[in-house]
Image 1 (cartoon, rainbow, N blue to C red):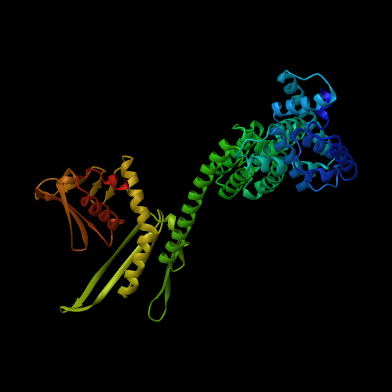
Image 2 (cartoon, rainbow, N blue to C red; image 1 turned 180 degrees about the horizontal axis):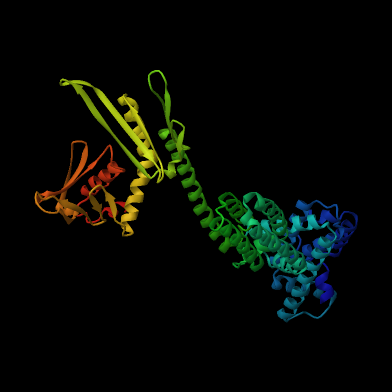
Length: 492
């Protein structure tokens, strides 16, 4: 029976002779035959594989394997039993009655087909073999979406065993490069990039070999464990480079590499897509922040000449605020004050002198000028560049429980301590909640007073008091919030 099944059951002796002669003269011509019984056709095609050599076209070879794989799926034991018995009847051989005998022989025959294909694959150069396996599996599974014929699954299983050592060695190289990248991450992105470049190349080589296995595993509804584990190792590096060293570009590059190389591993593909979306959002946010920062830099930059004959330059930019050779970096400025004093002679206005002062904890620059347009423009720039930060820092200090002095007043998060002035006797300090006070401006000062006692108040000079304008802004903003109890609530 083994000999019968290995021959051409169901084919006439004359036709069989023609087919064998054709096989000897032009092995690949049997691929064009039609109308043959499935088993006979398979036996002819398996014999034709002996003609495959290292120069055979990879695409054609992949197509050839797909042909025989699909034919093997169509093998019907009952049809083979019928053909065998018809031939036996002519030859006066006893009829085969047990179908399981046929099934056993067909299983053995399929192993022969796999061996014939494998022998042909082994005659190919390594890269051609990988290409043929990849194209074969990709074609029969529609990119891992459909189940493959059993013959292809068997070929992939054999391929996986034979490539295990190579894949393991390449995976070890990937692990070494990941470790090196982590070890050098503290030295900056320039130190990490060469290792990521090498990692990219090694991972691509690894994936090229593993691709047929990945596609087959996906078609079978499972993850290729080695691919999954390696992808998670690379993902771990991408996460560390971003979370620990803020290397967004390299993290995005590695995430893109995972998406590209491990798209056939569903668990990894889904996770990599989430990572990519998250990194894309961060990139977009940073891009927008950079655009806003650039706009902010343009908005705060200003330069003006002050003086009639001997001019001095007042300037503000992201590098700091400058006046008469004094330069204060923006982050170093801890106090600001400004205001104007109108002058007159015999009731006739003679102009206004404007004062702007800014400084750090140890020194201060004072600018006096006459032009209101320069004064107003500079204050607007100063507010954007410095005062917004000082306002935030003041609210954060209050939230931490610190009290701040402004003239005679002591500022708390939940209220303010004012002075009750007495005609006779010592003045008295009175603590008020924000609901117990009101504010106004008078005589160049920001005034705060108790609602129920006019003697309890404090006046803080705009032009002489450090950060008075900032205090006023905070309180007036807070009063606009219904039910406000603490100034630090503005931080929310």
